[in-house]
Amino acid sequence: SSATIVAGTLAERCQMAAYLCYSLALTGFVYPVVAHSIWSPQGFLSAKAVDPLWGVGVIDFAGSSVVHLTGGSTALIATYLLGPRRGRFYDHRGIPLAEPVEFPGHSAALQMLGAFILWFGWYGFNTGSALSITGPNREFIVSLVAVNTTLAAASAGISSLYLNYYLMERKTGEGNFSLFAAMNGCLAGLVGSTGGCAVVEPWAAVIIGFVAGLSYLVTSKLLVRLRIDDAVDAIPVHMTNGIWGTFAVGLFASPPRIEYAYGQSNDVGVFMGGNGTLLLCQIISILFVLGWVACLMVPFFCLLNYMGRLRSESVDEVEGLDYRYHGSRKQDTMTVEETPTMHILHPYGEGNRQLLQNIKRYEERRLRESGQVPLSNNNTATEGD
Image (cartoon, rainbow, N blue to C red; front, side, top):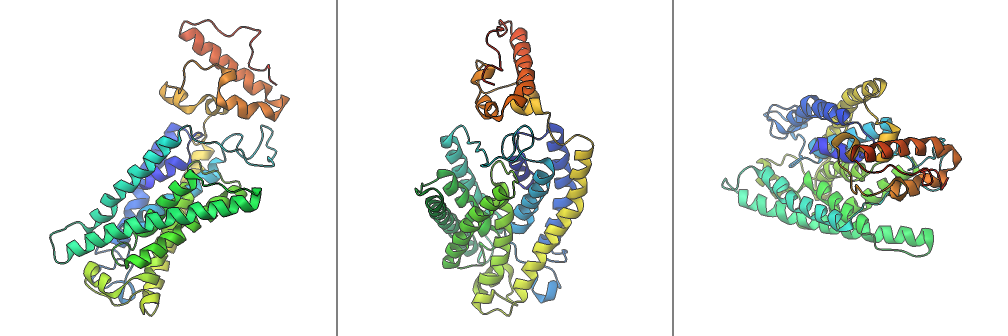
């Protein structure tokens, strides 16, 4: 999961070899250390250790920090070094655009289907972290996890939807109910619930989800202002709410729920009568994950970038990485002038002529290889320039 979080953020501009390399580095060297430190009984942060940190340890039931914060922070490092998609924040001369160009997905129906598939899969992800349903009190843990997962996702979807409506109304004078904001809001709530789904009460799960939806949308807007390009908003969903989900355990963890899940409740959430030790342990785990990821992945991505193995060629990005790397395209019958990319590129001025000519040559070569007649001289890729 941590590796696939990064893949979404870097979509449309990352070399295939870079995907393979960072997946190997992340799953082979970064994630195992984090998972061992927080989940293993021998881990120095684990709540299940014989001598846990400050007698309490870190509670991360299903991976808010272990999985989502690890993947989200890696994605932030990678996209910062990789740079934005062409035409997203800058024109072809590197001059900032007055307004960022939106690259909408081609199918809202498939986006919604994907969100529901993820939501459904989260019941396996969170409840499966109980590892057993037959031990003492395990049925109570599993049922609570499922309820909290549902409530947090629904609450986050609502808060994100209405905050986006409010912000759009303030900006343009007319709000809209964004399906994209609602979908990613639900995913943010799922991430936020992951760390404490077994140790918080259902009412607390609603609050955690509500805050998760707001934090997702605020972080998403902030990244756009900073001109950091996250193609699928994975950083706001996973990194921001990985942090929030881990932190929220230190606020809302309930004494009987911790007792059921971990067999001890030496300290509980601050809002539930705790003395703050658990909250401090949660903060330490957040700092540990961020530090470990930064120490390994910043040099790694810098090296990939220095070797020229991180970013795809500009022509490949425009023509489409599916075609260049995998030999397939969305519509083989499209000409250069008809592709949606051209509608993005043409307004950038005459300096874009050379890039369009390169694309035209690629298109003609593709047509010759398929036995079709190349584009005529009267129907060139630079007519609209």
